[in-house]
Length: 124
Image (cartoon, rainbow, N blue to C red; front, side):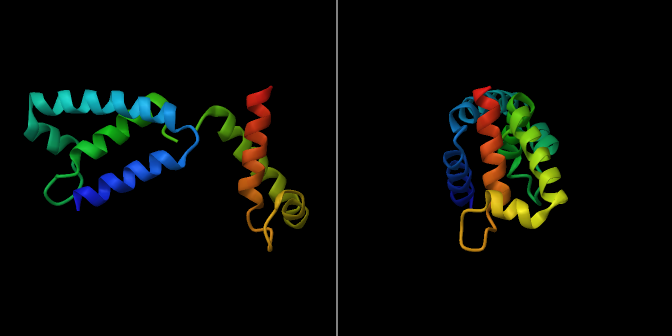
C-alpha cells in the first residue's frame, strides 16, 4: 500500500511542468518532516496522521509543508488566469468553447484557456 502511494505521489510530481520547483519544495519539506518525526515519532503520528493507524503521517506532513512553502501545484498568475477564464466562460459558454476548445467536442476549453492565459502572464 505504501509503495502504491509513493508511486502515485511521484507520478503526480512528474505530471506537472512546474515539477522542478515543486520537487525542491517537497524535498525541503521531506527533510523538515523527517527531522520532526525523529524527535518524537508518536507525537508526529498524532499530529499529522489521519488514517486509522496514523501510518500516513509523513506524507501528510510533507504535503502540508510543501503547500505552505510553494502553494503545491499554483502560482498567483495561474490563480488569476483561472478566475479570468471562469468569468469569460460564465458570460458566454458556447463562444468560450469555440474560442478555446481544441478537441472534438470542445470540452477542453477551460484547461486550454487557463494554460494560454498563464503563459501570457509569464511572458509579461
